[in-house]
Image 1 (cartoon, one colour):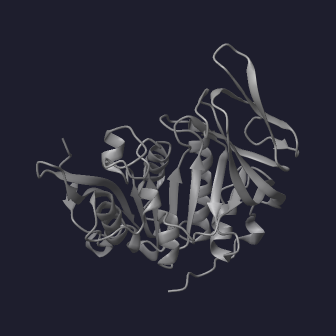
Image 2 (cartoon, one colour; image 1 turned 30 degrees about the vertical axis):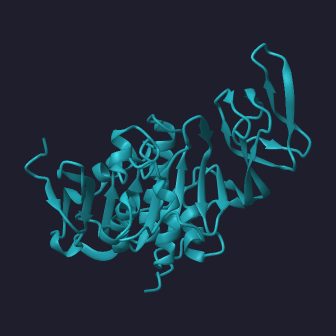
Image 3 (cartoon, one colour; image 1 turned 90 degrees about the horizontal axis):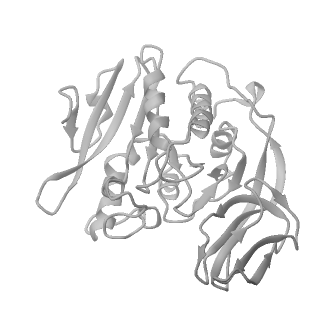
Length: 339
């Protein structure tokens, strides 16, 4: 049952919410096969004072759960009396996928590969189109919370366009293990938000299908840093790590032999060209193929599923790496987003 303090809306109109309030709402986005509404759960914190709109989205892939407690904890901590602007937290962006405990939408399509969808499109195209039109388009800044897919693990890393002065700062404020320079020229939600003029970054919060409280706490520090940077709350930027690793490019590498897969390096491990990164065995335990690093790099993510059909993923290798300082108090000049 929904609490009497929670309401259902059809479109996100920030002006309808009272200043100095936190609300829990359900946004009716589509209907299911018997005509019942499918609703997206949203937190809205509107500050006493005017300011920008920061939007956070979680679980666009339905089994990527770490973003949910990040948003819950953030809204539990926010003092709207001191807040300038509005924070919107979309707890579960892909409700059908979440209920099925799967990455994709319930028509087996990845919502993060088809943005902005179509207003007159098929099931997944319509859903992502309405999500963007009714919610994401209302943001001034956007943070999209993800994890690895099933069978893989990630470091805590950020996808951002590091050539953009705003998204570069938003990324560095997170104090991540790794930042991947990733211009948003694709059909992801981040790419579509950026195309609408909304500075957007993606936080990759480790692993799917579980809550990992170390990365949840780390990401909360980063999001609070963004709130300080955007002058939405008073406080000081925290920089618990001195430097982070910037990868100019990255690539996934794949097997060409099936069998039982063993991936050798650990997450965040720097490797050299020619280093052994994986091997496959047949079912009797005989090694049938070894795989070696094609170039120097750092392990951003890796497969942990030993069941490997030919063409399965091995490692996500960050390339052209350098060390850059995480942002500090002396480097937090606010850049006004262009309207």
